Length: 210
Image (cartoon, rainbow, N blue to C red; front, side, top):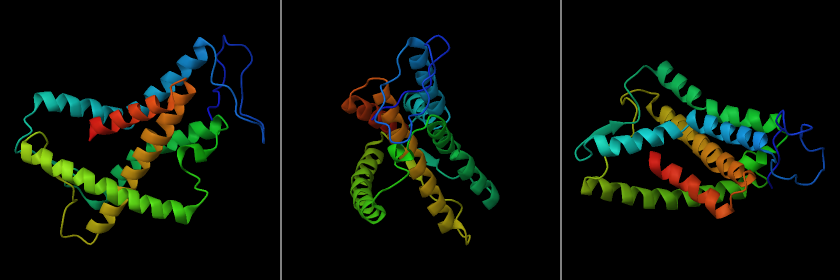
């Protein structure tokens, strides 16, 4: 359930984290508290995937798509590739920090699975289903000339090519599932959005940068 953020300077006494065992708290009240929460969401998204979404939309209307190729990994030494992945995870760290500072449970963002084996099994099945549908749509879009050809592999011929692919997949999964799904949906609900509206906004963001 939504939890409040600390009250702003003109909203009366600050609302801290809920005491241990306390029930759900009300959404933030007061213009300052709501503005602070909106600013937080915009900062987190701007540091994560909002920029990718904006530039993807711009490229769609300004750059030819048919026959173009985009590489997910730029040619670079291993240390640079690993550093890029590590710094790309900074927004996830920021979300964890904000959650802990406001006394929220990390389970709200999908970071504390209660059933690790069952969750892992469902994750694999859902991942395969989404991957098959997404791959079909991608191939159709490339064939129709409304999408670029994506080169998803890092530099080939190295012992670290496969480990780097795994690290890249972990980075993308954490960034998208924690920030764009868990964090964004929960924050929009705290701002008073209906569940379906928050999920639709998350889906729209994910679709735009893809």
